[in-house]
Length: 130
Figure 1 (tube, rainbow, N blue to C red):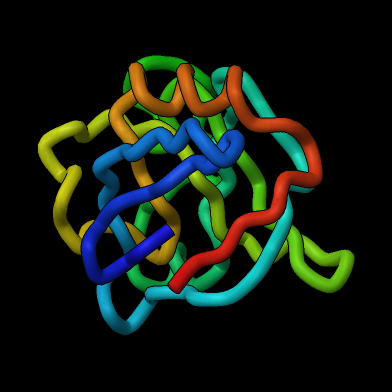
Figure 2 (cartoon, rainbow, N blue to C red; figure 1 turned 180 degrees about the horizontal axis):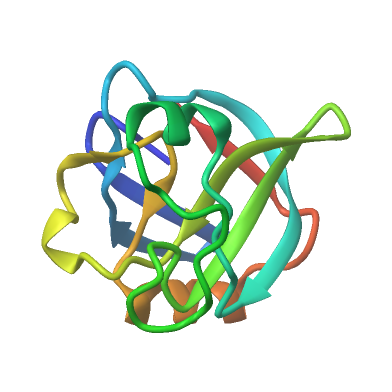
């Protein structure tokens, strides 16, 4: 994942590389590092973090799965050092944000792309975010 280029690359083998356009975290929220996929969910519920609640008054504790959920159709949960980083690679209910710095640190793809990526990625896949 190249945050500056706003591109996610899935390297399947020496001959197959998939490239996806993404939205990344705003500069003050951007995360870089090495992680692995520790959980995968279809149509996940969204639980905003305490920091998100501090920034946005009235934000619910849980947003139900569905087309208006900010996590979109699928989510890959990133873990590092045996712990949830709270960062995700996920779909979005706001496809116009792709190519921008729009999130609180997560990597967003349009729902069609995250569904495809979800089917190609395996649990514990290594994720490098630069």
